[in-house]
Length: 255
Ligand SMILES: C[S@@+](CC[C@H](N)C(=O)[O-])C[C@H]1O[C@@H](n2cnc3c(N)ncnc32)[C@H](O)[C@@H]1O
Image 1 (cartoon, rainbow, N blue to C red):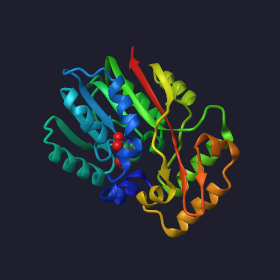
Image 2: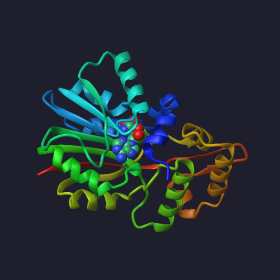
Image 3: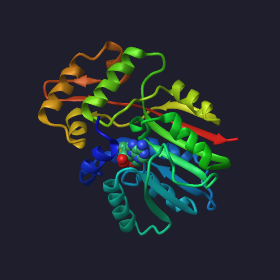
Image 4: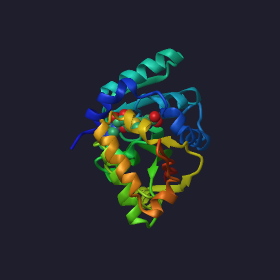
């Protein structure tokens, strides 16, 4: 089993190109629904190269960006310097054991990362612990349709072929259950439209796939169940395979 730290340390240097264009709809949704205040003390869990932390920084008092990959955190620090933002700090750490005291934050964000986590319940229990009463969690991740086990199995298998640190994409209704089980109040949990169409070869290259891995992915796409082809808008020609991954966004509060 490859850890997220190994995978993302390896990928860090070539990570940024394309990524934000693929995922900017979810970032805009988080910003639009966070109700940011200049007094907010924010934590961005699994910050990667810092896209979300740096997008929130101008709207809050301070942000800590946390990640298991020091390679990704080095990229984040570089981006921060280029943008001249002084209210962001970076810290190595895991989502399942947040290295902060209780009630340390008014706002927690986490974007397109929980599908790597070893335990979503442990992550959400930690979010509930470090949020102040009334604090908000804004979340986005890759998802699968509700009540569609065959599509879920196919999509998670594809993700794992492409990135051995993948664990599981949860459906929106699973997210609602997990948020509530952690004692958080789930206000919005919904799929969002408008994410970018992705080229399979580009997507595979971004995670460092070999030619054999890309071929295995193409073979699996050619055999995609009809429900998956529809859900992920798969288009296949002799030259390329493209698709649109589904994303879920959620807003929850503590108390
Ligand atoms: C797709 S990237 C992050 C994207 C970033 N949140 C953004 O908005 O652009 C996923 C990140 O999750 C991190 N990660 C994976 N598992 C983690 C865990 N258990 N705790 C903390 N970070 C983790 C990886 O190191 C990687 O940097």
